[in-house]
Length: 198
Image (cartoon, rainbow, N blue to C red; front, side, top):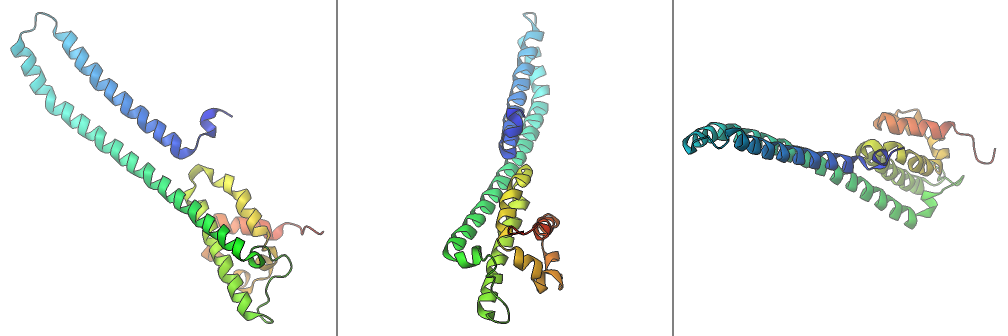
């Protein structure tokens, strides 16, 4: 695997944008140098003024267009970087919540029961809602790195295997359909994994 393949996709975009700016500036410099060299010593100052005055609008248009394209690409890249940072922040908040509520974060076989303990069961479902939303954010905004997050997400979902398998809302009432196909697939993978004690 090359160094380029290991580089963050957002960083790759910024490298390409910086390269494009360099190529553009080099093109403009080369154009001006070629223009100056092509005129040679025989050119009269009036000819130079005429040529420059004819090329100035074209050069300004090319420069403005390139600047607009580069600004758009930079804006798009920065927006994606911000969304990814927000997704990671959302996941970090989930982890802080998990630290505060370890009984919900790692329920093992002691998953709250809807009939015997409805209050804790509702709190547990809200906790899982936050987990699922954090997973959705990571999958949606991690660009080409989504598969790197699969292991982390599945690791979190495995703590809730009993709920994922037995939840009436998730399975019979179609609650799973409210999540992205990618998260649905990861949930299904966790549900079908054999139990650790088997």
